[in-house]
Length: 557
Image 1: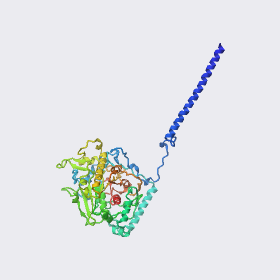
Image 2: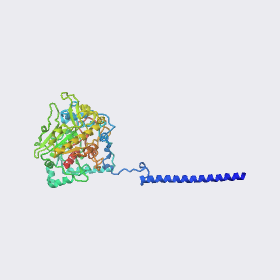
Image 3: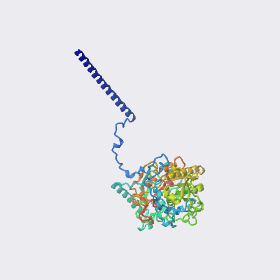
Image 4: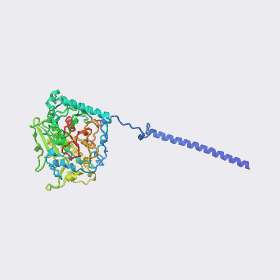
């Protein structure tokens, strides 16, 4: 009996071992099948990158020519809502600018829709502070981007730029300027007549019309700055009839003027050279209107200097009363300026509208009344005088902050009643809503005014480095093109402006990116009337960057 039991036991052990081996084989087959399935699935979804390391492990190289590119980080917002569409939101800025009202009080107090400023300003325009007007833009919900500290270029790159500018300056001294004295007042720029004699005479005939048609699709915002010995287009020290001294850097403490020698050159097309006489012929029996804040006023004064070549014109007529520009009793200034060139019946005007919406007093008999800020209504000036305008240029941006609203007692209204929309309570959203609203209204009026061409100018950047206007912020750089000289991006850096004009008949005058790389062109520390330690890194020296805005405008009309 024992051998029989032993044999059965051995047979049982053999069967169990065979089953274990078969189970292992089956397990291995299943593992192989599962792995193969995973491999095939991974290959099907990302065939070329399934087995590559994660992108974060790649070696990233910095581009060699970064100094010549405009940073694309200027446009940081997304496109999902009014809030996300707000351009240049800086969440780090929270302090309000109490001195922002100094310059604008003189301009705003004479508006029908604006309240008398909280503080009493100087009535002498020559003593108006140059940093006052728009420096409250650092408020959290609507400020521009706080531009980072100027990128440091390679020494040889910066040296090359300095040599290029110096060469342009040297050439200019032997051609356009008679350097009779170190005093800028005695530097005589070549007149329009002399420049005309040096060039082949050109008339605004069929050939120039063909040239304009060919350039209609040109992206003038894409290009580079180049040194031009024929610049500037006018004298900053002699254009006293049209140019406020607070923006004429030739009358200040600044001694280097290389920034005046730069010209904007579009990348894929040529830009028609500006000539005052040609502009007047093109605008014969027409009116050009700038409507906006103090940057719009700078563009207006720049245009007047460009048309006249910076020379005094006693024959130019003041037609401000035709557009309601009358100095109110006790007021420092009218609500704008309008001048007419009699030889071509061309009118150029500027109307002060810092927010580009309608503002009306709630109780006109009370000087301390609050004002209704109608976000969904265009300025009353446009509604009243649009039929008299042939070319309209609008802008806003720097006055959308709590300092301005509180100081002027503005209360946001929508549909004729105080705003209750929490989304629009944020100033960035309110600003974008207003831009959309006004642009859409102007576009809707174009069929009623076939001869009207309307433009919305994008935001003019500021360049405070190392702080804000009241915390030691500065823009001390005086070397042109030191942070770049070329713009290659296709879309505007001011997303809100670009988005507002899409699908409308209003065109975008895109100047944001090309102005961003001109940080040396601001008034900076050179203003005589500025407070000690306070710099103006918002407004521009004239002649300067705003001249280029007008050159692009001239090419587009």
